[in-house]
Image (cartoon, rainbow, N blue to C red; front, side, top):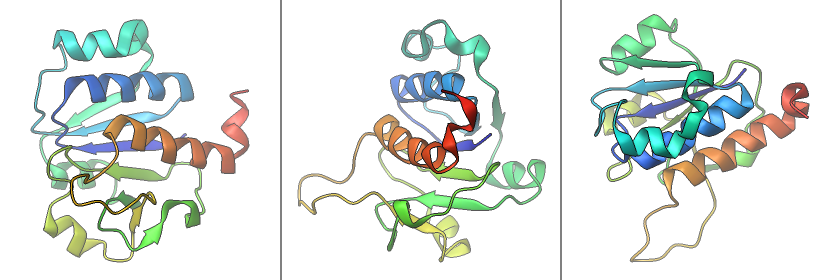
Length: 155
């Protein structure tokens, strides 16, 4: 099982779509607060459809609590500031794949803590486009991790 970690997600539809993907791929979802919405928010529920009861989801008060409760896990940070390609990661069962806020990404302190664990999804450099949609980014990377592991018998 893989772990998707969302650091302070802001857009309920993104988190709902990610939760739906996690439900259907048996991936654990970790949400680091504060969230830009309530888990009970209609937009989150609507985007996740009726899959929420299938999602293994845990929320944490902050990043340090997340680290403590998960025994300081091995993290792969997905960021536009990464200098390595996500396709170069050799994913293993129980890896943690972390994504930042939609508007601000991950804070500098987390970047500094994991300087060699920062990866990016290749995309055109454009002055008016910062990044891909969060839910799309999670899907791209998670499905690469699943592919590398023969989809853990999901198919």
